[in-house]
Image 1 (cartoon, rainbow, N blue to C red):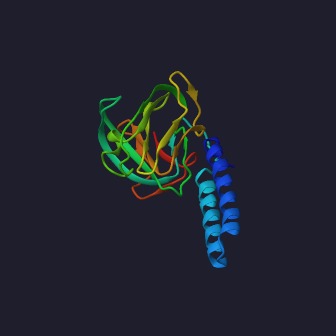
Image 2 (image 1 turned 45 degrees about the horizontal axis):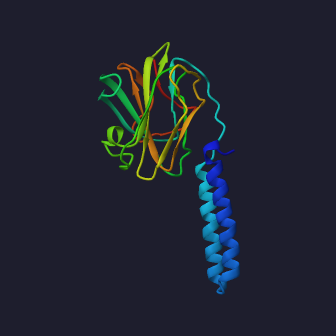
Image 3 (image 1 turned 90 degrees about the horizontal axis):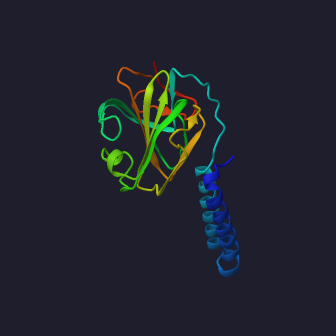
Length: 216
């Protein structure tokens, strides 16, 4: 299964690959070079398919759990000042996605969307300390009956050139459902209330939509 955000790119890539394979066969006279070109086009197409895959995940909905919003590696767990919405101290948990990870963003908790804002910005590497405040990003706040307001931020990376965010203010959302997509390498930050129990550690690989990253 592939994410709907990839349908157009997959279609264009398929056309390019077919034309490339046929063109190599017709216009290149060296047999080994034809094979190299054709294999290169096929590998390119496989990478595109791999990037836009959207595997089914089974979410056990629980208001006392914060689940991973994306697949990736935990790169930050620290108490920080959140300057945009809360303007106070929160626990930041950041998950970095490589181009090989699934890039679907899922809601980490159920609740009511209180805030959703897009910010244009730079394309620093996603693990850069200033990426949270200087890169292209979207900030979303979901209010939950157990945790109160929880903020998550989709952050573009050096390769990511488009963030897709489905959250709209006033919308009721369900934990584990599709919240958006980030194209080609990126990061998601969670900002949790102080005192939240963190269930992961730096360096852990997490599975979006299923793995519990924090709890009451």
